[in-house]
Image 1 (tube, rainbow, N blue to C red):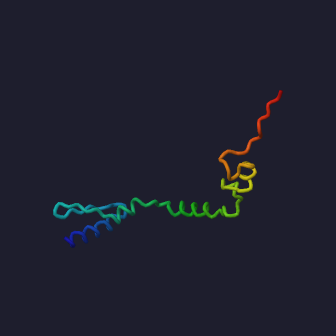
Image 2: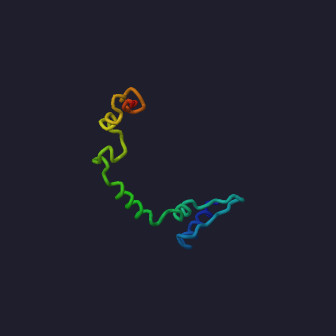
Image 3: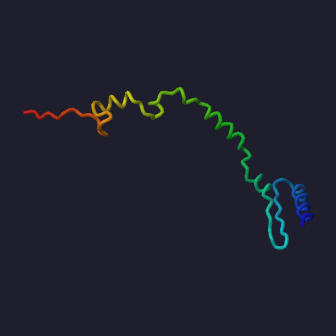
Length: 99
């Protein structure tokens, strides 16, 4: 059985790297997972990974919190008025009825 697998691997290297060989021993089929894995890899993956690293290199640590959509206590306190910390609704002026 081992001799058959060695012969199959030798045949795969001779046939080229794009060919995968399935081996059947006593009715059980085995696949060359190394060969299938190589076929499924992205050949342009190195270029894409490099571009992703360049895009992620842009530092957002120096950007203002309001540019990132984060909480800003001063702006929220101004918007909520006297209701800051007391209510979920901002302070509104009292309605006056004109006569």
